[in-house]
Image 1 (tube, rainbow, N blue to C red):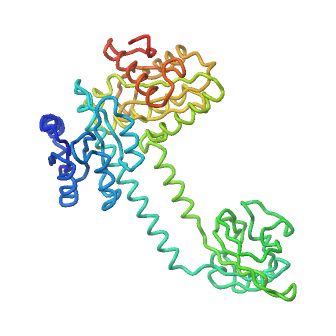
Image 2 (cartoon, one colour; image 1 turned 135 degrees about the vertical axis):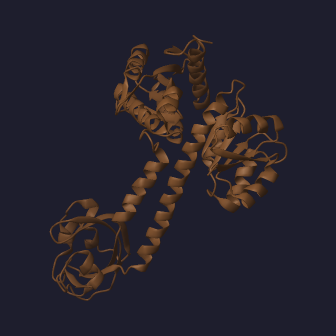
Length: 426
């Protein structure tokens, strides 16, 4: 079944060009809208699988569309924004508003060639994110319907009562918790502490809420809990001083980790995604500026990857991308960043000013050129690498990205398989 794509662009020429480029793949059906206003109506009525959105349009532009669309249907349909050369900062702002990716229009046809792979990647990533959010909502609903564990604790930290839910969660026999000391069961930050330093030993009469502590079940098996301890007035040491209501948040912690992983890392390769790359580059430039140090940005585009994809299929192609990512990680230090910028493009942030960039580029090329053996298949790749330096070549995120991209493109135009520095090639 073909994926319906709503293409919003006021240029009929662009509409026709992109229609031919995408529909010849046999995987997509394009629906045209010649204005953002018409696009909004079509988006809500037709519910396409993806929206291709041009930024520059008369009347309502691409950013206005994103705002209006988000008000009524936030995150329901993935969006890729098309921008002209020099307007990438607009697309970056749009990504912060919620679009899934962007691509820069060009006259070489490169944008149209990259789009099918980018569309497939965006749709898959978007579906995974929506699925994770639905799981989170379901998880929260289930937690609200399950009775909390409740225990009473006296001024000395001894458990005086516990409800059946607490006994079940702590794998205790009925009344088996009564008489035990809370310091044996509830470990702050996962570390056992004496009662004197325990959060519940404080004389404060304020309620305490925490979600970073661990309960230890029978047999010593820990699990993370979120709890609220409400203080009660007590006349003697044996009277209940605290009523503690807790929940097992093991699944919530797992979901948080999965969401964080999806937000910052490329699902296929496991390296940083484009958004994390941009955020990290901003921070790296700030550090370089404060320390008056040099920073290098490597942009890498694989030569010959399309042939591997076409010859062996997308499954093998995906495995090759995973191998490329791991080889790149193996070429740099743990403190450097390797990210998948999109499709078969990768970006590396190198912060150490002592690194010999020529030697590193040659090391990367040699690693990429080693054979890729998957089952009985064997393929070969090379790479075109563009390098931009801070502060010599550029002084801000967007300028540095553009400089590295230009240098990489110059290498590809000059015959591919090599590297070059921004400035030397322009």
